[in-house]
Length: 574
Image (tube, rainbow, N blue to C red; front, side, top):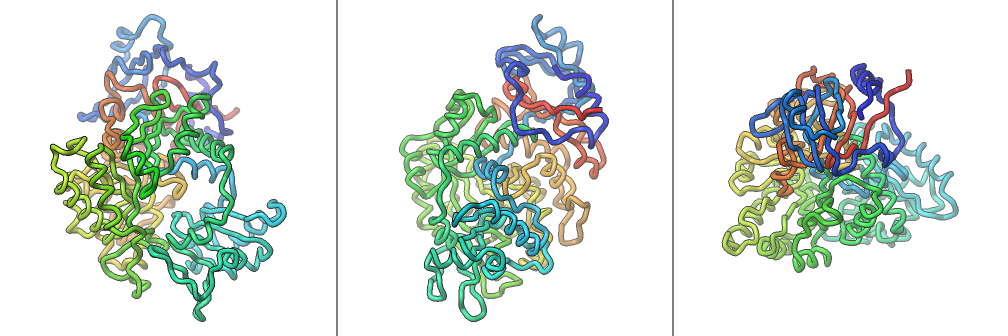
């Protein structure tokens, strides 16, 4: 039962909810899957097609059997129902992160995390401290740094790392996952020197004299990364568990994994079998790869591992990231006139996968950030749809996706709706990237940057995610970013294009029913309606009504998955 102490703490506001150690509720405290529960006195936003508002709901055996008033709920509740008095807490349909990397979220929690590093000097200081804890000549690896708000906002170099650690290899990944900086020993181990050519789809940045400076972009990262000792299955399982626990602690009821392997799926299923994770998952397999070919042969796996994970997608890449100048642009970068970014895969290599996927009922989701990358993928999708008529497809409307869709030519915005392509976007990317995007793109191209509202107005389906661990992974931040389009400190200027803000109802649907549709699950989840799964995200404040700046002060109180309380925040001690 939700305790009165919890409710009082929720109403007290921002300071009431402390950081809680990783862990699910003890089994004895969690509601049984077949148990009936009566939720009353709630502030319930259903996210159904009518944007309905309700006071109470009844759940039985993990499904919603009534939504409406307190009195109506009491009439429909089975006699043995557990009553949860919400005392006015705000209830959303169970929120879904439509683009995240579960394993990497866990490794961020468990390893050398450089998130929030504010300067090169701070990166060096933290690296020095880390080096003291790493024994012998072991590789030092970490990630999460981003230079865009440093002063000056310049990439770190091997010389910067060598000043701190020059006796063993160091590999530090940029927050976007599309660039690494390594020290001199790592370059030497990889055999990278002034004569090493750029690999296809990658770039080795050079010093003025022609020597590599330690920054490796996109496919060039593999020149070093293949030498780094891979994590063991035990380490990976711990990371997956930590990532899942963090997700439910933030209010996510499902996470859509933007690329992994069948081996990782097997590890996830083992965790489900041991009752170590409760988070629902929707999975895409990285491609091109042998695993992607296996999925094309075997077809989708729906509701596997006790009904908690579906594997039906292939995650492809066409370009890199804007911050590391790997995003493929139609015109050169404003701050690098000799570059239009990178294609990390050739279109000719992707087209056969698209054709096979249509015939096998496999969803395609492609990373595309630059306007050239997005146009190429829209063209490839359109060609595939024309090649495989509806009668020859396993699914008439395949609901293919473009992940990120960050920089679009205005001419390409209507094509998403015309082709039935879903734009899977991350609102927090905009409020992070706009600190450097004008330098990369100039001002004219920003009209089509992070254009959520234009896509929605054109009739496209837009779903929201976090790309964690690239971003923090908090649904409250994503909701705030979508409706405010301002930094966490409240900053925005004319380059941020506030006309692209969405309404709060739209933001909620981008995090609930939209992702359910993108996963072919809109009849099962995504809104609070009779017959659907009882997945709920319960917050301390009314995110739909409070002033914009107050949104960031709200906290998750409870996460419910299939009628089971998988997380409940503990009140601060008086």
